[in-house]
Image (cartoon, rainbow, N blue to C red):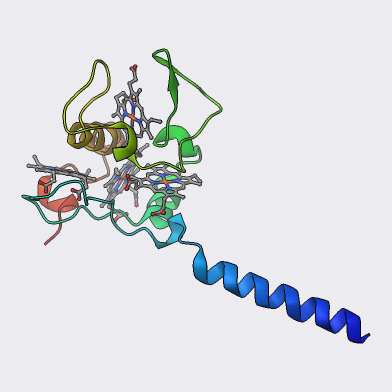
Length: 126
Ligand code: HEC
Ligand code: HEC
Ligand code: HEC
Ligand code: HEC
């Protein structure tokens, strides 16, 4: 009995530590924009999980994609990387610059869906 209690207490303790230390996508409310050293617009709103749930997007790699030799790898996801890890300030071949990457990804889908924001001030909310 006692041993069981200790194990349960241990599991509870460990899971609370994990909850506190893991910064996950649930906490994302805007995109990391630290690379834009002199931003011209207010930060774009992006409440990660709520957004993706409302928009009904199921595949993580709809946004967190992986390419190999110019081909999209259907079953792979780069969710452990920032967009800025691959997209630099300037375009590089087929790879758009970071600003363009965001605008094409976000606005591109919004334009297709026709019920999501496409005006500057709707994403870059003051
Ligand atoms: C669908 C959402 C969306 C719309 C609409 C949108 N943007 Fe953005 N924009 C983003 C995201 C996401 C980023 C990258 C994260 C950030 O900077 O907040 C970004 C970044 C930028 C940046 C680089 C960072 C900065 O502030 O200097 C500029 C400039 C910018 N947008 C201008 C515009 C302008 C001008 C319009 C309207 C023509 C516009 N955006 C419309 C989502 C959007
Ligand atoms: C609509 C586009 C989109 C979809 C779909 C999406 N994400 Fe993201 N996610 C983003 C953007 C944008 C960021 C911020 C990236 C950055 O700052 O460069 C992000 C950030 C993250 C982060 C990093 C959080 C942090 O700050 O440490 C994780 C983890 C993550 N996403 C996981 C997921 C998982 C898992 C899924 C699928 C269930 C998913 N994402 C689906 C766009 C998306
Ligand atoms: C692991 C590296 C990597 C990461 C991380 C990454 N990209 Fe890309 N992305 C690429 C490469 C490589 C291409 C060029 C693909 C090709 O050859 O056509 C690309 C192309 C794009 C394109 C243009 C083609 C398309 O798919 O529409 C957009 C838009 C884009 N990325 C947005 C994003 C956004 C937004 C994020 C973050 C959520 C992101 N990327 C994260 C590597 C990456
Ligand atoms: C694959 C499609 C898709 C992509 C990619 C996408 N969105 Fe959306 N987004 C939607 C849809 C659909 C809605 C409308 C959902 C609804 O009806 O509530 C939406 C709604 C929104 C809204 C308004 C509602 C809310 O959640 O606040 C904002 C702001 C927004 N998106 C920002 C972004 C940004 C920033 C990005 C890029 C980082 C992005 N979206 C990428 C499909 C997408």
